[in-house]
Length: 58
Image (cartoon, rainbow, N blue to C red):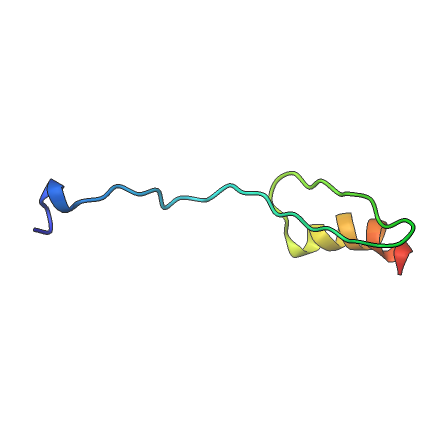
């Protein structure tokens, strides 16, 4: 049965593309929406989101 095509199911196991969304609900104004293209690493998150965008609102 192992090599029988009737029992073989093809499936994609490569990298998955997707979208991650974050939001906030606030009175007044909040931080702007940030669009990040490509892979988001911890360092990119700190450099591109936390420091320039979120820190001023804390």
